[in-house]
Length: 329
Image (cartoon, rainbow, N blue to C red; front, side, top):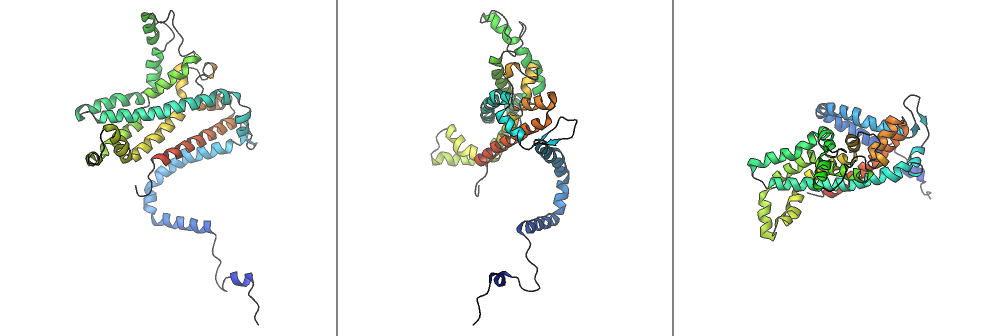
């Protein structure tokens, strides 16, 4: 009587055959094969891929590596693990007391606010006759093209702290104030001014994308909607316009997030100071520049950059989930 076969006898491959390679090896081989089959397409993509690798992927990897080291830009980096990330949450008083609350407040108001304003103005301009539509588009888009010049000339003059400043001059003439006010040096008003100026310059590429998306919506859908019971323009926007231009809404959402999180330079452009009075306008990018270019603590600045990158990625994933295509859309 034969004994039952052992597990070794059951799983042993037939004599003369090679064992199957691991799954990741098979995937890499399949990827290399697909790239070789489409080598002409990848040849045309090579310039972009090379630039993307050199200026995006490599800097991100370097920042990630430096974030776990202590480095002053002169000596050789010394590995210290995740100490910087722990210090951000436990030792950095400026970050927890000023930077994080300011960044959240700024992002919550400017991000969704600028996004909704872009859509609202794009929709209003789309309702205008074609003969004058381009003029209004240029008028709203122009501030985003000359943002730095406008900030240093127009807004700095508007909120200037002397009698010549436009705002002080008007308020003095109206008798609302007795003496000129230092608007840009007053921590009470600085964040509000930053939000107003940023919203003014927020009609950028995202605004143009929304305007272009509105022009691609099939007008027959509106006629079908009226037959199905849509009674006003607001219902048309929610049930027809927005679902029909999801790619443009997604692109605009991503641009709004990127623009909001990297808007730290606005406080420096308005006040002329790297560190604003009482850290009133101190945002995440200002904190990174403080440690990178004033204190030369590049390891800590890299850790802050990684935190900002993770925050940006999380917000973008939320936007993709909201406006990304689902199923067979």
